[in-house]
Length: 296
Image (cartoon, rainbow, N blue to C red; front, side, top):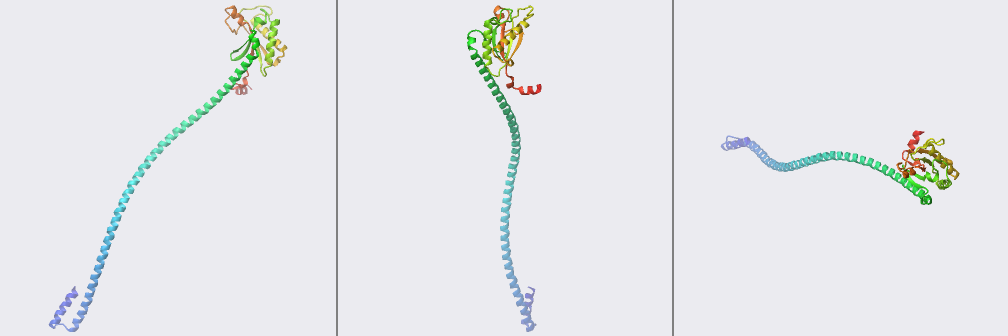
C-alpha cells in the first residue's frame, strides 16, 4: 500500500515536471511488481480461505465423528455397566450354586451311606430269610419223616426256644420211678433213631425231664438223677439202633424246665418227658466267624 501511494505521488509529480522520466519508470516498475505481489497475495488469500473452509468442513466432520464416538462410548459404558451387574449377579448366583452344590453333595453322601446300609441290611435280611426258609423246610421235612409216629400219638414234633424238638412222653417209655425202657418204649426209640440217622450232618441232644414230685431212693436221690438216667438209657437205645455216637449227647433238666404247670395230673404227665433236640448249626448265624476268631 505504501508503495502504491508513493507511485501515485511520483506520477503526480511527473505530471507537474518535478520528477524525471527515469525515476518514473523505476517507480512504475516497482509499482507493477507490487501489484503483481498484491494480486498473488489476493490469490493466495483465496486459496487459504478455501483451505480454511475445507478445514472447517473437516473439523465439523471430525466433530460429528467425535460426537458419534462419544455416543458409542456412552453406549459401551452402559453395556459394560450392565455386564458388570450381570457378572455380579452371576458371581452371587455362583456362590449360591456352590452352597447348594455342597449341600446336595452332603445329602448325596448321606443318601449313599444310607443306601449302602440299606443294601447291607437287605442282604442280611435276605440271608436271614434264606436261613429261616431252610429251617422251615427242615422242620417240615422232620414232620413228614415222623408223620406215622405222630399220627399214632407216640411223639410230637415242635419248636422250643427256636430249636426243633422231638418229644416223647416218659409214661410211654418208662414205668413210674424207673429208668428202664419197656418193650414198646424201646421200639419207639429205635424207630425215632432210624429216622434221625437218615438226616445228614445233624447232631442231637437227649434231654430228660420230670414233674415236680420229689423222688428219694437209693438209685435216684432226686429228679436230677432220674432224668439223667432216663436220658442216658434213650441214648444207648439210639446207639443200638445205628445212630453214630458222635452225633448224640445226653442232658438232665430234672423238674426245672417244665413244659406245663405242675398243678394238675395232666400237667405233671406232660412234664414227664424225653426231648430229643435237633442241635442247631451255629456256623450260619451272623457273627459266628468273629466269635470263632475271638474264642481261638
